[in-house]
Length: 459
Ligand code: ADP
Image (tube, rainbow, N blue to C red; front, side):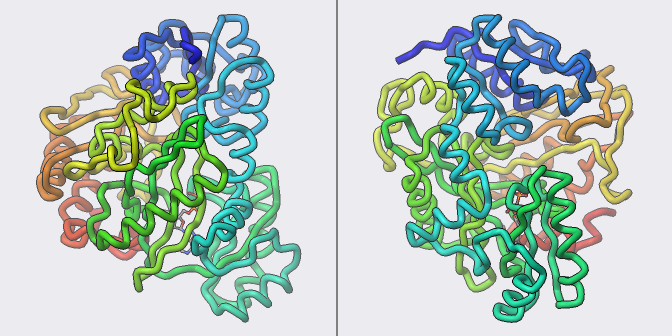
């Protein structure tokens, strides 16, 4: 067992704070890195030490400065780096360079990342262990003709996806051949621009599916468990807005089958650390693997609430070499993962839903939050006087509610969001309350088209 003394978080905002907290509770010193634009951001003050990176770089590029971050870590005596989500979290080169520098990367190995981080390769892994995948061509499509041939064979609509895509970007739904011809090249160009690789692939587009994902935790010795599923169907433009667990609209048998399929995929690569296996469930109840995210996810909080397992602390302990069945982690077998109650996470963003979710920026003049029993808040830069800049993701704070019943977890979420008083920037709070009050949501039955199908939610 290596005992870490110092961890650097190569990230910013709420997830950096979340990780600092886990380190703090484990008695580990923390190091923040921040860009020029984040000089006044809250997260850097939550670490024991903080250093400017990317002095001559842009706001995003700063957090992508692999060599600078690793050199800084070496200079400051850092034992391990946690990448959070986004930025370098799914970059195998970064994981490899950390390893070469003798710094533990808190996450899967670069080899696992290479196998799973790419949407095409991970579909092949799923197929190899008999997990259903959405009908498609599991290799980059090279020509328009190939795409047309597939679409004629499986029928429209189809979806074009960037192999390296993420965060809901790099996808195009195509409903007829004429559009396919138009979209094919622009999808390739867009993929190249956004992700640096122009590989795109094609699959059948499922109408009105549910997005169900399974949290996985694995150690360095091949022990792997799942921490049950999350329903992340409340999305706008393929980006998640509200997530909850358990996905109670599905039968117990279906949920078990999905969790078991997730385990099969994780086991196929001997997965370690925290990861998420994502599925779509169609209107007939069939589930299909879509991708695996080899990192911590924004919505991990709901799983923590119903299992009582601190996923970030577990990641750190796993990286230190503790097995799942050690007293420190305390997961002796799958049956030790008990779930209790219901949990819902709402992402409060500085966006204006009545203006097509345009990001809003400026100074926060008033910031009052609603906590209380059953409410957990994971905040980024929310405080009076804070400046919300246009450079980063607009996530301001996540409210995660927990209760013994779903109805009560909903009431707590609504109460918490109503208590939240923010002035100076617009937020999506009213929109979230409209969703939480919607009868389809209360039944747990929303599909991924729910937001698009219900424009009254924006009023
Ligand atoms: P990303 O990595 O960008 O998050 P995902 O592959 O996880 O992309 O997909 C995100 C969302 O896009 C899904 O939750 C779903 O709403 C939609 N989606 C992806 N593939 C399909 C598909 N084949 N049919 C229908 N919807 C899809």
